[in-house]
Length: 171
Image (cartoon, rainbow, N blue to C red; front, top):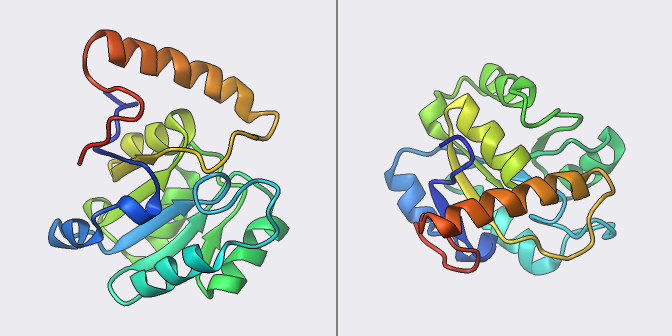
């Protein structure tokens, strides 16, 4: 199931990172909008900065986004981490770029994001471990409304099949 995340958590604070480390994950790839920052935020919260800074001790931290370079770069500069903008998720372009630059194996990479259609589907297609988190806010970019519509249909299917239910976290 290409749209099914291996882990589902409320937010990035709830992820059991030591469990990921034990799995051999070395690179955490975070989606930007509604995963680590609200879409109308200019900067991430201090709490989120602390989490991501602390994670740098054990993991390579990279921000990935379909958004434009100037937006993504400002967050990456603030966090002092690498980034990929205009990633075209769910296509593998951005993931391939990260793998080529840092020489990770696919099973050493983990995609963390709030959208099933871009983040989870893209990460799964590429062969990475994937973690779905709930969106930080209700406001989305216009293009994302199409993805959210598809996502609701996928989640309804999963719920009917008793596979996954929104708000019932696992992993």
